[in-house]
Amino acid sequence: MALSSTIDHIGLLVTNNQALGDGRLGLVRHAAVVIEEGVVTAIEPAGTVQADEVIDAGGRCVIPGFVDSHTHLVFAGDRSAEFAARMAGTPYDGGGIRVTTEATRQAGFDELGASLAARIAEARRAGITTIEIKSGYGLDVETEIRLMEVAGLYTDEVTFLGAHLTPAEFAGRSDEYLDLVCGPMLEAAAPLARWIDVFCETGAFDEAQSRRVLEAGRVKGLGLRVHGNQLGEGPGVRLAVEMGAASVDHCTYLAAADIEALAGSDTVATCLPITDFSTRQSYPPGRALIDAGATVALATNCNPGSSYSTSMSLAIALAVREMHLTIEEAVWAATAGGAAALRRTDVGRLSPGSRADAVILDAPSYTHLAYRPGVPLVWETIRVGERTLKGKRPTMNDER
Image (cartoon, rainbow, N blue to C red; front, side):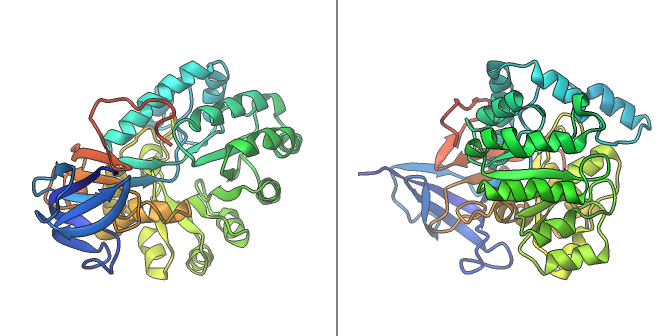
């Protein structure tokens, strides 16, 4: 007989299911979450459940595990000097990607795996239980495949981002580079990835080139994602909506037509406010997106150049302060919104049938995520019903 467990004595539970509780977040007070074989089977009153294992929340707030739908976690090297220069006034232009590419190409599988394991452990301590990981720092067939193989040890949400930037050896020949991306590189990458992504931006790839990448990925059965509208208004949002991409990410600079298009589509606007904080850019128009009816997600964009953070709590605080989301909207965007961006229905919520991913906050309410910015409020992370202890590094192959 399978062992059962329960998270009991929850002061305030966020279910993200309005049928179970109050308001947008489906709030339930004095609750217990019942778990069987890594799946939530019931929400019951606190203190009423008999189970083989009891995780005592001690009156704390429990929320669904964060769903980080946009990261670049597999890389080598350091770009702290670039950050320091940016803080001294050098504008961000995305060109530092090539610096990371040079270091990453020189790193072997074991080195990349060890550094990723450390970042995954950090993400777990920050309450992230589902994570998307992109390639994109290899920009050649061998290294791109190595990055996806390492990422696949920890997640099923692997994204092929060969079209991140044109590498130095193809300078001035971006179309020729895309012959490689859409040909041999994609052929080798498709079995390792669920998604394909493209950086549709001035200085990276234009609309026609981005369309070519997405169409090639679609033929191989990959879902579509787009980096768009990060450095200025452009075609990224329009292209993502037209092609039915699951998400368009950054959305820092949006025209009224972009907001309208997103509101009338199933494409999620994934906002990355830590990036805008780190690059000193404007913040995405989150309030306008939500008021128009668009689905908004928050993600960390953890990467070595423009957003070296795994703190979804910081993303929430910035979304509330700078994007004018309510705290409820920001928490939803970091959980259920991220799940929508990954086209997932099993994560981002705590209700019967969902995966048992939960974060116990050392606080009486989720409000403290914005109310106490910078404070590590994650008391415990539970993933697929298993407790994640602080400081414990995940083992390769047991995370997926």
